[in-house]
Length: 509
Image (cartoon, rainbow, N blue to C red; front, side, top):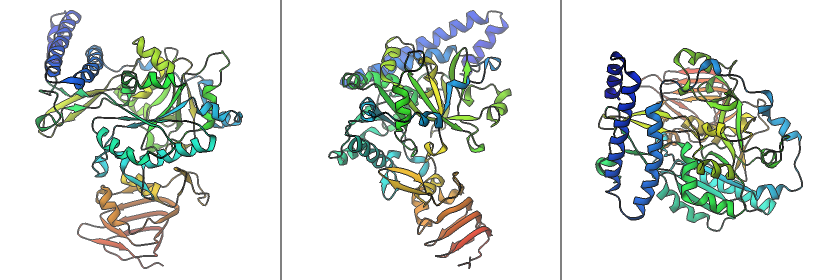
């Protein structure tokens, strides 16, 4: 990158910026293609064919990366979406459901993005295999939800998992446990792309191996890769041949992302202009905790996803405002299979590039080029947003989130979590657990049982703190153990609007 920028500067000084830039771009692209061919020469058999397809996608992304100059949006061209382009969920529900719910369900495929590892929560292997509720994993709950649908409506809704090279092997092993469940499960792998040396803009990898010195030189290129990988796997055509028309895509760690029959009915119904909607993005109202989330805008006459990475620095604060940009993308998406096929075959899927800088264990600076699945919204016809309740966005990204979904704030039925009717407020408490709780194992050791949180508004816990059985938390509770101190919350304690610090023992019962 430094060489590229330096070259551009020289070109600018010589008054031949555009010409020099094009020469540099062509040289970099030629060098990249040469290195990729060298890497392919080290692959064998079926792996070589798969990698060749992956590299074709990577070349397109790299080509576009070299041509991008500055933020991908002009701020003055951003407009609020037309009112009818983002429908309130209540309006969708008011239409009611037809008698033919099963007919609509039989056109649906549930796709879960399953490429991530549980490393941020101190776990090894796929994140989807972490226990989140009553010893059920994310994957268990997903299977239970779809099986319940299939049994209730006598339908055949399949589950598709988009794995990565990080999660594929472990996930396939665990899938054997669902053999006798009433859910057909398919998998496909997203692409494997080479990380790029930040200085030379060439691959770090020396061969196609994934161990030893090559252990961390590959990456899965974001969930925007779903379109190409789904198409290349052959599974897209297979499902279309089976009569499937739509997919419901969501992150597997979003426990609020269940199949919604009202949204499905809206999707399969014809819109006033006689054309069906090809893409629905579920959005929800932004809070101050969501200021970095992508939002929907109107741009060049199209509905478009605007991510913070695309925003010019001078307008970042404006983007984060909860008054101007009031909604954000939940990454729950409903998409036409036929439209995906059409756009892939026409090479018309348009997604902004996300440049993600990383530092490898040895200190080497690299970049990885990614795309986001929601960014393709502008490529589809009659795309729209639906402003859904916050309950459909329940991601478990941290141990603090895990505490929330394991608590009595939620009840579990047929794999779905619903907010307890005993809670007076529809919003969830704000929970901040300190670094002593970062890993799931540490978290489990510090809670003898999950506290009663039905009346909790805010919880902050920091330092060496442990909780006994049947502790109740109400209002705002802050517990901070000073360095070297330990706070034990005895069994049966009720903490209501309290600040506890030092090594004090709580005696309220």
